[in-house]
Image (cartoon, rainbow, N blue to C red; front, side, top):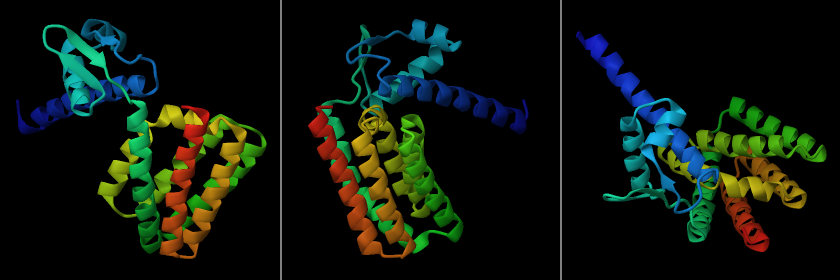
Length: 222
């Protein structure tokens, strides 16, 4: 086997492992698996059309993330995201999102500004139509654009993971029309601060945006 063939084999292996890992992780975070439910390697392997090996490797990686608990000689069980985890994630996010918005003011390009503006306008349109799925997608896009505009791959990676961990809660929260409308208003204000390159204002608004989300979650008892 030459070096190119070896590299191809390694790439395929890691690609398969990554797909299995992302699928199981998505199923845990979306609520498909209940907390403390056993994750059986054979069942998951058959469902995904893979052997037990990439499933086992994915479960070990998920244990490192704290989403799975592997008990020797018993099996792997869902830990998932607890209520305290959610609160912790949002509090940490409130500070990091603020930092991200401030850095975006310093680094955002004109093209990225135009994309951000378009997302804000589309969100305003879809909330009037009560298209909540589209509003959620645009909410994701808004934050992702700011993460990208911060020009920090480390900050982007951390915030993207946090954003993903609470996707189920975010979906429930944004399905409430009043909160969805307020969220879009807050996004508009953050966008205007970034467009004006007002780092302090953007940081404050982004921080407060996440704090209000925490308050809404507590109010809904999520």
